[in-house]
Image (cartoon, rainbow, N blue to C red; front, side):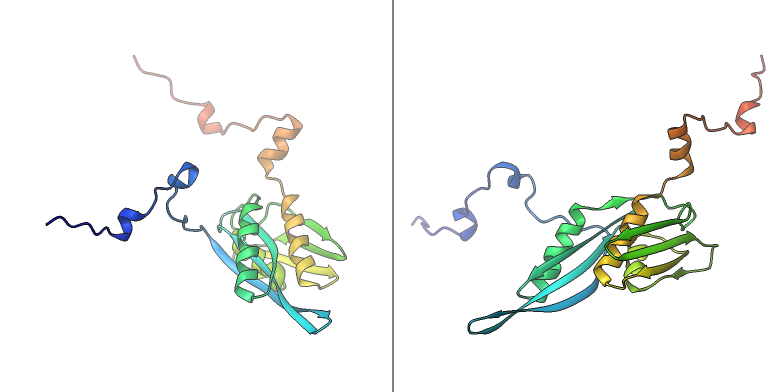
Length: 194
C-alpha cells in the first residue's frame, strides 16, 4: 500500500528571490537601551485613544551608535520600530583610549550637550540620555554637561550631533595635506649583511 499523506514540510512552497538566501533573521549586533517611553493620548469622538512613543539607543560598543523614536499602540511594537530604525541609521565616530579625541558641543532643538575627554578611570559623567549613547558607543571615560532644554529626545539627538563632529588626528592631518611622521625606529632599519 502506498502512503499518500504528505507532511507539512513537503507542502511548503519554496521561497524565491532574495529571501531564499536569508532564511532566518540575523542576530542583531551590539546593545539596545530604551531611554524613554511616553504615553500619548488623542481625543476623539468616543473618548481618548492611547499610544506609546519609545526612544531607543543602539550601539556596537566600538564607535558605532544610533538612536531613533518609534510610535505604536503597544509599547513593545514602538520599541521594535525604534530599534530597527536606529540600526539602519547608525553613525561612526573615533574612540581613542576609551574616550573621545577632543572637546565638542552638539546642538539639537533647544538642547545642547558639551563634552570633553577624560583621564582613564574617570568614568562616564553624564545625564541619562547622553550616558546611554556613550555606553552604547563604547566610551568609558568622558565629562559631559547638558545645557539648555532637558527634553530626553533632544538631548540624545544633540549628543549624536556632537559625536558626528569628532575627528581623529589622522583625519585632520589628511584634510590639511600633512603626512604622518614615520617613527624613528622605522627610518633607521639595519642594513642587510652580505
